[in-house]
Image 1 (cartoon, rainbow, N blue to C red):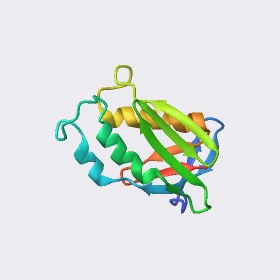
Image 2: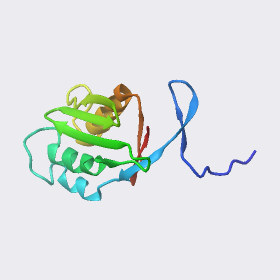
Image 3: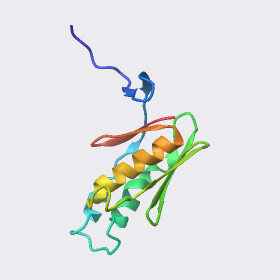
Image 4: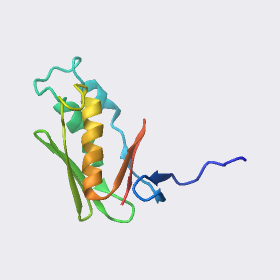
Length: 129
């Protein structure tokens, strides 16, 4: 049996086992990795400069006009997609000391709370609205 690659990313939503169409939100800011400790000095312990640089391109509009916003305030990551809103925490002790892992976990928690799916690849961020 041979499968051809889909034209649209049809990821499976684990909640109800139905395909979810993912829409490209933005490209990943490649310069954000330069702000990771120890190459970039910072005292937060969560890589706050990296997090801020990573989430900045996520503040945009989807092709259908839906506004998407993502911001960090302290340890809290807030993701807003249209009228849906979710929050995640940068948990250093329970998740990892690595800011990349902490951010991915916090973004997934925020997306789940908002009722959307977020997928981060090596080059881009996809969202189901």
